[in-house]
Length: 308
Image 1 (cartoon, rainbow, N blue to C red):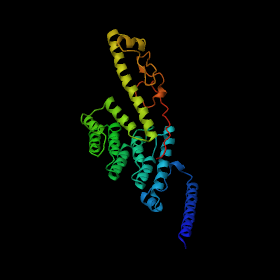
Image 2: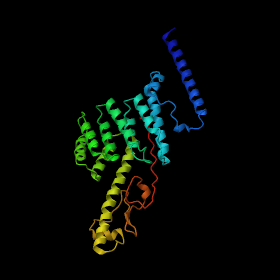
Image 3: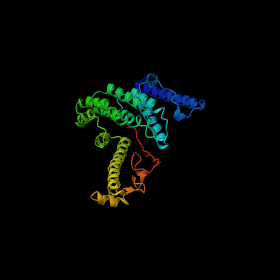
Image 4: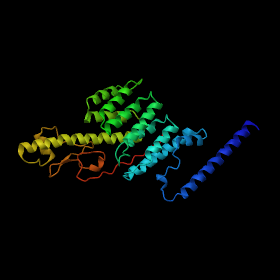
C-alpha cells in the first residue's frame, strides 16, 4: 500500500474513532440525568486522558482550557458561590500541557479570590502555581502569580516575599520582583503595594480577560484609597466644627483641596446625610470595598476570555 493510501486510511480511522467517541459521550450525558453537564467531570484522570489523546495532548489541553474558561465565565456572570470543577479543570489542562502559561495565570487570578469573584480556593491556586514553577522554573511570571496569591488572598507576607524573591533570581525577571520582596519583608499591606501588583499584572500579560480584571481592580483600589482619605477628612471636620460637612465642596474648601474630589470616571464623590463618603455610581466599581451604599451588591463584570 502506498504512503498516500496509508495516510487516507489512517485519516478515515481517526474520523471514525472521533465520531464514536462523540456518540459515546453524548450517550453518557443522556444516562446521567441527575447531574447538570456543566457540573460533571466524567473523566478526571490526566494519565488516562494522555493515553486516550493518541498523541494529541496539546489539542486536548486546549479543549479542557476552553471548558475551564466557559465554566468560570458562566458562574462568574451568575454570581455563583460554587466553582467545584474549576480547580480540576485547570489541573487537567496544565498536566496535559505543562507549558500552557495562560492556564496558570488564569488559575492564579480566578481560583483564589472568594466567591462570587472566584472559587475561594487559594490553596488549590498555590498548588497549581507550584506545579507550573516545577514544570517551567525559568518563567518569572509564575513566581509573581504565586506571591500575588499569598499577598492578596492569604495575607501571608512572609511566603509572598519568598515567592517574589525566588522569582527575582530567574534570568530576565522584572526588577519589580525585588522591590516587592523587600516590601513583603516589611509586612506591607498598603495601597501602594497593591497598586504595584495589579499594575504589574496588567503590564505583563497578553490575556485580555486578566488585563481587564486588573484594570477593574486598579479602579477599585483608587476608590478605596480616595474614600479612606476623604472619610478621615470628614472626621477631622466634625471634630473641629461639631457638625458634618453639608457637601463635598464644603469639605474640600475646609481641607484646602485643589477642587472637589472625583472618582476614576471623573464624577464627584458625595457625602450622605450620615457623613458617609460614597461614589455617585457604585455599579461602575464592582470590586471596590469602600464608598458603596450599605447593602449594595455590585453586578460583577462579565469578561469574555479567549483561549490562547
